[in-house]
Image 1 (cartoon, rainbow over the protein chains, first blue to last red):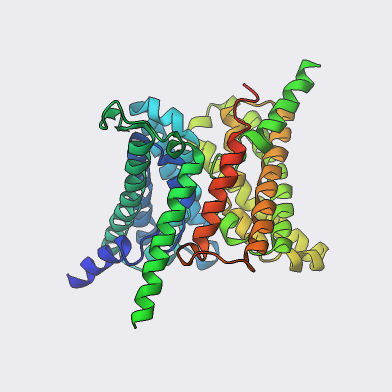
Image 2 (cartoon, chains in turn red, green):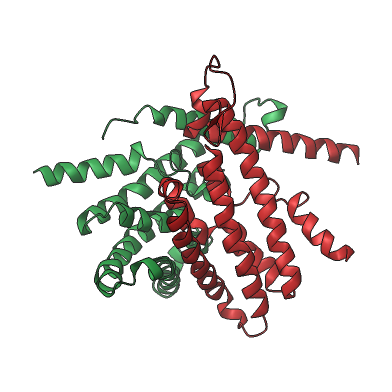
Length: 201
Length: 196
């Protein structure tokens, strides 16, 4: 039981895919300019990450080692197609805005990375937990950035006015540069923290 | 004549106005990871331009000659494109290994990286989302990686200068690269609205 919790926890904080390992950054910066698109992106990510982890792990004994990467990619592509079709049917407006990034979940380094590094070597249930953990780790960072950017850039959250009308929106936060600046500050905070921690040891 | 103007518009828009790295945020992994020095940046950029143009043409052909006539586009597009690119990169790798070992050695590290570069797949999707015809797709498949090269070379040049300058403790490492990218993106935003 303890091991299962540790798999779950590892994916959220100590090995957070976005902040610590710094992969999958493209979609994080691209869709974090509004909370709605961040939510849809997290949904799409979970719909691909969890099932592909389960499928890869359940087939791990019959996938030949030499062609494992094409097999992973095909599995991930199938789930991405399903997710894109579902998103188009139920969340049309948001989907049209971030279409490109949902289609590109198929080359998201986090998902391929987890298939290769975890699901290919562990049993189905552990892989499921790992998938859920990574989804939360990804979603939390994405949502946190999206909340800050939308609040500062538009004064709204998911389209609802939060800050008073007199607040002058910092427009740059919802434009592309804002995403880079936010990630820069976050990485700076994190690296300073890690340096301090190492200094203490 | 208006067709040529249209092509020029697509080229400028894909290279500068909608710069793939600074405005569309694709290919950030190699953008931050590989811009430590100028020569590896150039090697990677050439490889990306070559593979993007060829796989853009290949993907367009498959999309318009096989997937759309058979009505399979919504279901199979993603799988078909990723397999085209994956196998194409594999093919290039095999060919270079045999035909010119020197070039293969020079490009060796970058070739496998290209397959996972989201830029190439992104270009094939951009072509299909905008419904470009064949020549337009070729122009956009050439313009987008050119914009990538532009952004890569700019950041690499700045980072080479940074090595000898004093950076605040807080921004040391990758953080300063992102801050610079933010400022570069701000400059590129100035082009927005140039072409409707």
